[in-house]
Length: 161
Image 1 (tube, rainbow, N blue to C red):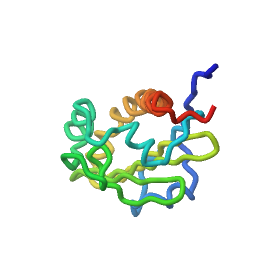
Image 2: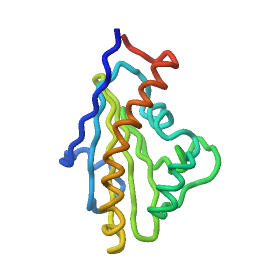
Image 3: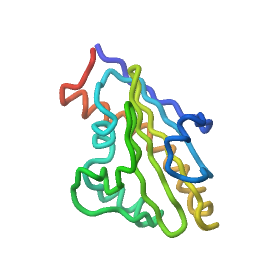
């Protein structure tokens, strides 16, 4: 029997997690955590969440709305068009930016959980203006992205139970 995974969100991102960000200052951060039996590395989780290249919906949101510069094509140095900016035991950091907004996504694993932390820096006032409505969509979509990634990893035989 498999339990339906639940995701929880917090806007209070601990300082130790903010330290994994490459941004010199963080203007917005949120963290979603999913309890799951799927076992995978942080990079495998990130690829299960975002793929090797961005989907058409991700291109619309990331490039069209947020203006992010995404890298085209598959590469071991990118996930979903975002550059892999750092990694360590239990975490990976994806990075991108637009002319008005810089972003890091941290994917962390451990203890039967996976977490997705989004950190943003508003490089221009437009960043805050654009992110206010975009953040509502972001917070609505993230739990489903985490659950879908868990299902993909579990279907691929990556279940600890």
